[in-house]
Length: 181
Image (cartoon, rainbow, N blue to C red; front, side):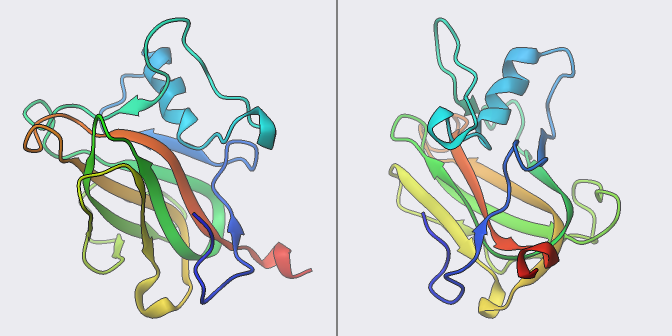
């Protein structure tokens, strides 16, 4: 995916190398394997200076819990500072579809609690055909949204929504004040 047509000079601002961090509402702090798979959502690979974590066997992408185990799940990205954002999204896979993505953001100094009214909604959730490929949301009314935190509630569509979605690269496009210098 690329920046929105309304802001073609926006750049990808959420990456491990840029200092962004990523969390999940159900991450067990002792589970290094799951944490590294989640971090892979922000890593684009060695070609882009961000080598991905690869397992010797099994899958290296992050998969959300099945809906019967955890019906409410959110991935949150801390950009480390407030930036102007214009597009947020993620990549889905054929074997564990993404049915919908609900995007919210916050410019608060500290990350709001999950479900808090301090999150700013980016319009209606993205609903997409059950297929692979990018699912993204442009800023409401095409206007840049100031945010430090981006929260994505992702629902799976495979097996009537019961299986958790496989989340590929997450992308956040925008800029910071330093970009203008």
